[in-house]
Image 1 (tube, rainbow, N blue to C red):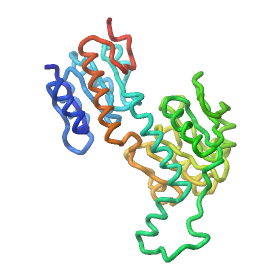
Image 2 (cartoon, rainbow, N blue to C red; image 1 turned 90 degrees about the vertical axis):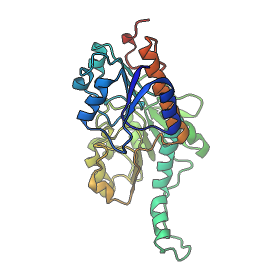
Image 3 (cartoon, rainbow, N blue to C red; image 1 turned 120 degrees about the horizontal axis):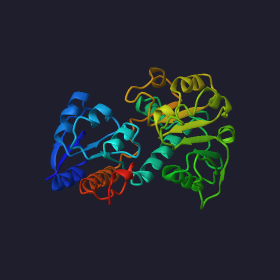
Length: 321
């Protein structure tokens, strides 16, 4: 059997699927591996199934001439040196599509949690402070009928936008490609207009050199003072220090974050702000989605090792059909 190195234990059904198809070596500890451990595992393997937390750089890719596939358990792949992998004929694969709805759901969960002060209200009740209804208790922001700005009209951005129709919202979106959001009342506008007019802003873009700090000091100044920023994309798409300033100074009303600039480290000042809700990167965290991601990642590796075109491959030119 071909050898697969798995850098982090996956859900049970996905792990069983791996065992049916590969000789397996896996990290079963609840932690990310060190570079030395990554090197050791990859030197043994024909393929590696890794996560965003694993930096698969040039040194690691060159450590094993037999390595044929790096299958990322994620949509993004900025943790992998794709240029070197392509040079070496190593397939780089990912898991797009299967986590779209789960991630859109978590974006909306954050939107509601921030707008209606759900986390603070829960803590208030659990602390025994609730003594009865009063007119001023935890007054948040209306959602229905407001304007949602969607930055990025890919699969997840479209799914986020679709959900807005249930709340009679006006949807604005911006996109770097020609992709449009059809089927709902949505208008494509420049980023500056979206930031200025939106009550809620959802980031749904990949992390690239062009999207690094897409939301920075100048962008916060364009936003409404009652605006709420939601980021389920990548942390470094937002300048976190400027986000903290905007939240502290009342330039925007709040933020909901599932990703962080220096993940897993979180800016300490964010931790102390009550107008921000922080999640531990759980956008795709449903049992169904995480297993399906595993199945796709494994299928990608099987195909690449058989010289066939994987279902989701970043550098298809390395496959000779």
